[in-house]
Amino acid sequence: MYIVFAAFMILLFVLANIKFNRRKPDLRKKHTVSGETLFILAVSLFFLIIFALQSATSNGDLMRYLASYNRFSTYGFSRYGSIVNNTKDPFYYICGSIFAHLGFDFYAWRFLIAFVYIMSVYIIISKYSSNIYVSFIVLIVIGTFPFTLSGLRQTLSLAILMHTFKCLENKKFIRFVLLVLLASLFHSSAIIFLLAYPIYFIKLRFRNYLLLIIASVFVIFNARSLIALFVELTGAYDAYGGYIEKDEVLTFAGVIIFTFVLGFSLVSYHFGAEDVKYPGLCNLAFVALLFRILAFTTVAELFRISMYFDLFDVLLIAEACTCGEKKRFTQQMKTLGATSAMTAYYFFSAYTFTTSFVIR
Image (cartoon, rainbow, N blue to C red; front, side):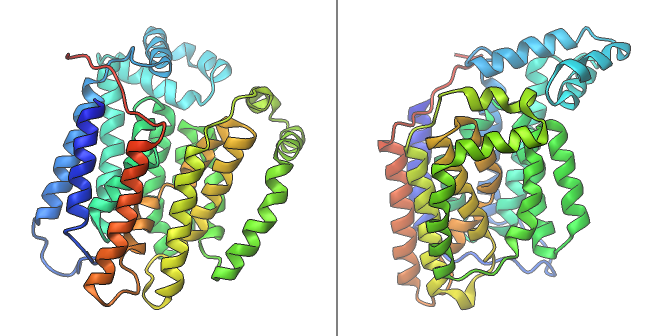
């Protein structure tokens, strides 16, 4: 599987450096199917096939989800109270149980989750990305797509939260809150994304980010104590205390790629300020980097929080490659630099993509 994705990454790299400056289409014009639209559909189908053929025994998370699905498929409606009392995010398991009662097995359930997620990816990239090929590279390199192959509850949350971007752009606060609340039914940690709304609209300059980075050092070195205090004050120890007591942390590789995402975007936005479409995305990327550093230094599970705030990095990097650049050559150089760095990271980091399939 690694070879397949390696070839796919090379294809994306080539296409990203051939296609430039894709601006938002005029929605008033009659819609026509372009080559880019067909490519997005083809990639979406490719991702969907990977989801559909992946074995449920390929990793521990999927095996646990499979066991839960089979167990709760035997539950009648009268026993749903026990699901609420004995599981995290019971709404996910109740939905799975209802789906099982309709006669579908676990693979059909995973296919449905995959379809919901991939359709969300299709919508956000096709509608808002300045370079769809760069966006797909980012989706793979930052680990979002590989994670969704096993983290089913959070996959549904991420799929729902992708639709909040339209709410942020159009300042639809109530709709934004409703979507976040819906996402939190599938993974309770998604509730923290409510903070994205005010964070997105904070107007910061380049020097403001530098000051924030310096101030964040205090938080990073005192993170475990601050997290423990938060859990104690909120009475959430039963749900999250186990994560704090773990000594596991993530590798430094994730910090490297997210530092690149934020640094490249800040520099591009700084010099192309008059042509930036989504300035608030840098704010979200900064928060994502902070949580990624905390996942490396303190509690590994904080990477899950990071994934919410880096959700729109697929748009951020694509926009950073084009903003403020009038000359095609400069866009080419920025795109080449960004895609070369991300592709090199993919091939030379500790990250490898492996999975087992039902059909061998």
